[in-house]
Amino acid sequence: MSIEEKVEDYKKTLAMFPNPQEKYQYLIEQAKKNEDFPQELRIDEFKVNGCQSQVWLVPEEKKNKLYFKSDSDALIAKGLVTLIASIYSNEAPEDIANSKIDLMEEFELGVILSPARRNGAFSMLKTIKEFSQKLAN
Amino acid sequence: MIKVSDLKKDFPIFEREINGKRLTYLDSGATSQKPSVVINEMSNVYTNMNANVHRGTYVLSSETTTKYEDVRNKLKDFINAYSADEIIFTKGCTEGFNFLANSICKELSPGDEIILSEIEHHANIIPWQMAAEKYSLKINYINITESFDLDLDHFESLLSAKTKVVSIVGESNMSGMLPDIQKLNSLIKEKTDAIYIVDGAQLVPHRKIDVQELGIDFICVSGHKMLGPTGIGVVWGRKELLEKLDPVYGGGDMIEEVFYDSATWAPVPHKFEAGTPPYVEAIGLGAAVDYLSNLNMKNVEKHSDDLREYAKKKLENIKGLNVVHTNSKLAGCTFAMSVNGVHATDISLMLDTFGVAVRAGHHCVQPFHRKLNLDATFRATGYIYNDEEDFDILSDAIEESIKILT
Image (tube, rainbow over all chains, first blue to last red; front, side, top):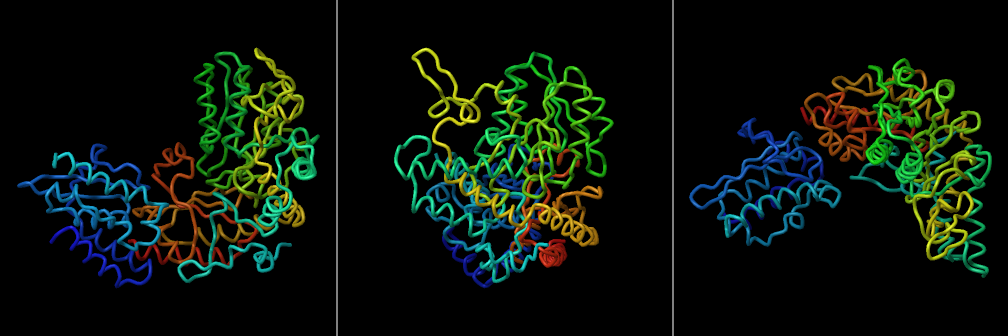
């Protein structure tokens, strides 16, 4: 699936939950499914700055495709970073770097993607883009 | 007596619904909501009389200047200052502390000491740290006890001839602690010639303050936490001390005479107020002071105390909830909370879905959070427009949120 298709998929899923509480519960479920983050990778090198909670994103390159492991000490943020990581995983660095899609415009996720917390999600995306850009070059 | 159901009608924001629910606003520790009289008064200035203050020789400027200067009188009465000249307008408490730290510490000698407490807001730490580094001063922190109060024995042990400044919170924005200001003042004055500054950011909105009775030297006040607009605050100081201090900001309106190589300062308070002041905000604050005075600060105090009693019992009964709150008989209606294994931002995002607004984070009290081994807490603070129902809704929402998140 391309980045755009995955975003479209998540959009449809999120639209099934009309109120913010259900959307958060969906993110919490995603967070709980994301269990394979090794404790030893919770280090500053992989920490995403600008989030209210602690968020870690670890990129990995396999056969010219990027994969992201993610974690957070807060559940809702972890759900969000899990979702973002899955959108950009299994994609070529240049596809990620060239992707023009604005997740914050696409997803209606209440206050967690509002300007008040935009820094957090924005930093997650920036981290992914920067890494992809470096590899694409 | 404050009747919340009537009083709420003065605050247009409570007509709003959040996520289809009634707004349960419990973040007044961060900023208070504004009554119509404040909003309308600011609008009135811009609509009918706007002109820069202290400058124009025309009707508009004269009207605005009169209104602006009259706010000093209102504040003088509100905190019982000796004179209206002792009221210095600032942007807020943060600017107040930066002004005081810079101006006072400049006169100190290397090795002189400043006493703060472990539970201070960053606004009452960082300016002193910056000045301490610049002038080689030492900062001592008073220990906070396990019940989240000042350790007075430790405080006494820190007082010495080297102590030149004591700057302590008047009402904690985390534990609600209300230090006995008069007692602290007498200890300080007995043992030192230090200046005693009170951080009034949370204190002045909630309690009747009489600076003469307290005997203190300075107090910093935040306008937006006491129904006023943002961008306005006050430093009150004894006139004889203010006269000795140098201004920190230079510019228009603070001078007497200017030459190419030097200048002389205008008298207190104007020498501390360089440039065009936020006069509309100051006038808005004046309307807020009138509103609070009409309610009577004794009633505001009683309301805060009753609500705190109720909220304390309610919150302390929630299973799994840790409440960072003083056990003292008297305290502010402020509760920092945490749930083991649950992040404060998760709880506060969940509470938002119930229409409950609380703050999550370290509330600008990071060192004390670190001491308690907490990354973050979420905090509920009550004010005049909150009642028992707000804390009932909060408690139910916390219980529901814990269920969802654990």
